[in-house]
Amino acid sequence: MMFFACSNNKNPYENDLGINPEHLAEIDTAHYTMIKWKDTLINFGTIQAHDSVHLEFKFTNVGETLLFVFGTRTTCGCTITDSPREPLQPGKSGFIHITFKSGNQTGEINKRIVVVTNTKNGHHSNLFIRGKIMQPGKKTDS
Image (tube, rainbow, N blue to C red; front, top):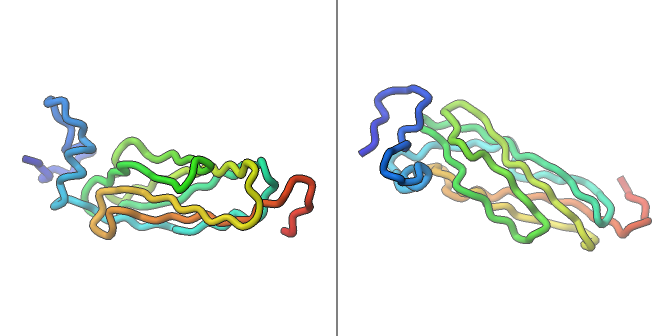
């Protein structure tokens, strides 16, 4: 069903059948790739309540086939993600961009982001952000 003999930049899952290429890549477990994360934990330090912080997790496709990011899940609505929509070629890197909005939260926070990919070394990757949120008007201790 799939042809991987040529190593061009074309997505082998593209088709004229109206089937989303991501769906075909997700079920083609024989051609899953490998992912390597630069970091899986980012501590953003201390911020004030109602502030936002923007972070990014870098990853590299260290396998031999296309890497698809099928989606991300967060533990709350205060954590927003943005991930690549196009597959990554072997050897290429990409980023999962995270925006954390502290809102009324204060104190220590630990948030988990689950990234779903077509990878042999774990279909789900767990990323973590940590930090401290101070009440408005209090001085940060950083």
